[in-house]
Image 1 (cartoon, rainbow, N blue to C red):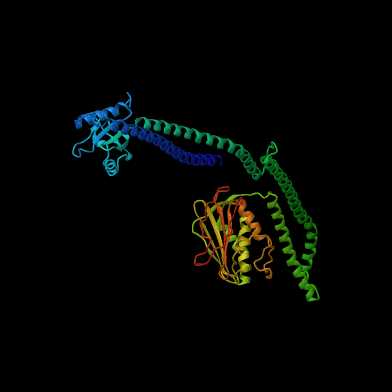
Image 2 (tube, helix red, strand yellow; image 1 turned 90 degrees about the vertical axis):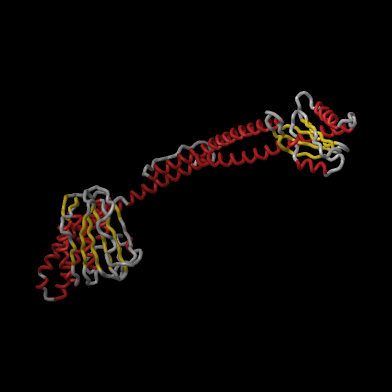
Length: 508
């Protein structure tokens, strides 16, 4: 900000100083030339009067011209302020006489014509180049002309002194302009620094605050606007620290509540499980078939209740940051085959067939067997739940840095926007749809946490009526950064469909 302000000040002030200097130089030049012209015309009037009095001194035209020119020239003094050119108008074919070896061509023809077209007493002036016979260099000059009854008189004033004066003035103006621009830049830098430093300190404080250093505060000096900004920042930081602490305490209470309730429920659940197992074992001995059916329902719901408690405990570990990774080098094909074998019976009951697409070479990676199997089981069960009895395709691939598994179903698919909500806890695409596989609603949420714990991705794609595909991508080496996946997220043959991404990377 300070550099921008100083640069802008330098640029704008340079333009302003250049414009002012140009106009000032124009005014000085005009005033100097006007004064020179007035003095030259006054000198011309005096010379014309003197020449009018001295006319007819000599009968010889040449002597008369020479005498008249030298007489007028002598009035310029020893410094030679001007040269004189006199021409006899009664001798149209004889050129005039010029003093000090001045060439008669120094008088422009347009000035001669203007003077000849006028009457006696006509005066005119112009600027031109004065040239001399010999080695004397040419120079710019002011030429004034007047006319008597018998003579044309031209005064030629060299402008060497005036040009020297203007050069000095222009250099002085340039120097003063440069100094002025630098002074303005220094003033702008000083003023901006007084504003920028507190703002910079506030920005640094905000960065440290965003990094988690909630105790960060700004130093307050004075009672100006910047001091009020510092106090407002400190108040905001204090309120933010208090709110975050309250949220942390609330989150800790919630996590502790879920963990405690889950643990406490295990004791009565164990007792209920023993009684339910006994009732389930002797369900065929009950005289009333409804009682036997109730025992079966009790058994299935207890199993679901136990799964829910286990998932709640796992979620509480992830929330508390207590989840750890027990990584070992495994072939992902073996994990997929084992998981598919576990859900094969469920898929057959739903009318779905699991199709495997496995590579011929091993797909080794450092993973936690229990967690990866849980991810795959959740994805397969989810595909069976929403597959509408269609085939489920499981693909495995690996490259140099990563391994990937995709689970593709051809069921109801996902609507626009649902790809980002599918991993939310207890979320359902259709709230009115009952769970037929006994899911708890936490499976995909736990799968997301497990994928992040590996440093991997869990992504979802779907289109209504075209089914969905979930992709699990894991680094081959535990803790390595994952940059890509060996399998595409959008399945082949889904052309024209719009992918819905739910990319959940570790550390997000």
